Image 1 (tube, rainbow, N blue to C red):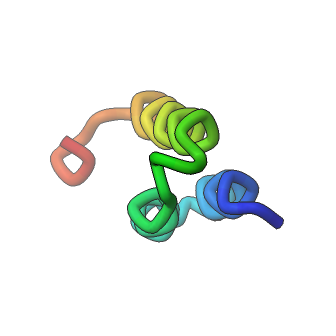
Image 2 (cartoon, rainbow, N blue to C red):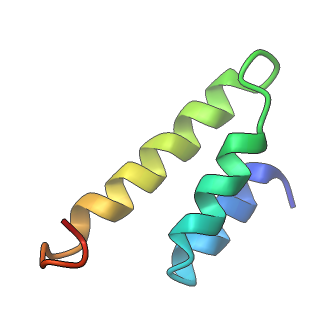
Length: 56
């Protein structure tokens, strides 16, 4: 599995912090497109969650 696949897996398991950790360790200079896709996936995942006091 590549880093992008791991990010997707972590998001499916509701482990957003782990997905962000993987994204933070990815090399944007070498894998820019994959990093961007992962960033968009994380953002999309968070925006789909209902807002409450904990998620605000």
